[in-house]
Length: 108
Length: 229
Image 1 (cartoon, rainbow over the protein chains, first blue to last red):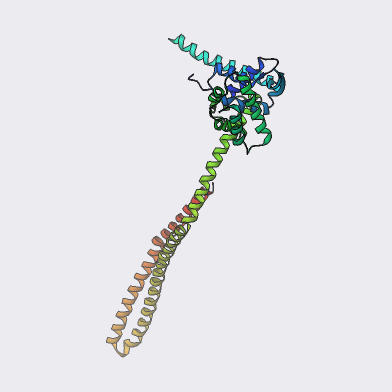
Image 2: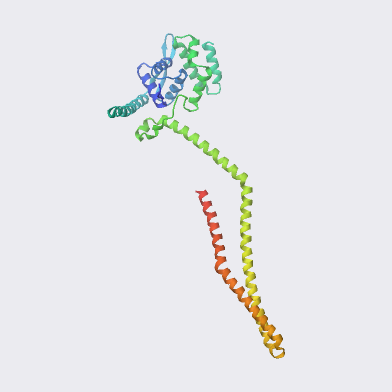
């Protein structure tokens, strides 16, 4: 993709991916989901998850899975609020950009 | 290389960070291998080297942006209420920018101080030389003025003395008296010339010198003020 993904957008995407699973989801799955929409190296995601965890937007808990404890991530209350703020901001952003693109079409 | 070797290498590379951070990262990548459903080699190929992984973890701990991130210019244009919510990301970015700026300016200040210290002997001696030259020129002009005044006074006194002597000699030796009176006139003329020169010096030359010195000092003073600001 020609457009860069900034830190805030990557945070928003990760929060959105994690929010899809009420039960919480795990590192490998989050990585694969995020990689479906943006290009990023596999090693990039752990620092992002760790930061979101430190900021209090994500919480980690151990879930029993196939005879072992798997570390899972889920959204906290502040994480949900933050995701809402990102989504609002994003839709405003997209609307503005689309507005400009469509204006150009009108002029042509 | 299998996952044990990879995790061992990663643990070694992270030996200097806190144990809890290291364990957190190792747990994550242990789960990552487990959940991937791929061969260890395949997962390691995707992750890149243990070094890359360790660097990304270290970068987050150092509160730096990861290479993938681009600084966002429009972040600064956000309104305050939005800033409250999205503050965490922006704080980090502004902190990073602040650090780099202050680092540069500190370096520049240090360089300027070093330059000033090294150049100070040269600057001080040149400035001292110029001030000395100025004082010397002013003193020379003042000396000339004093000499001219002294000449006027001396010629005046000589004229009076010759005039008195001429009057006394007039009846005893008229020829000598004429010589004395002639010399008196000559001295009087020279006296008047010196007086004229003094007046001219006082009117034209001295104010010019004082104005010049005044301007020089005011320029020096303004220059210093500008540096202070």
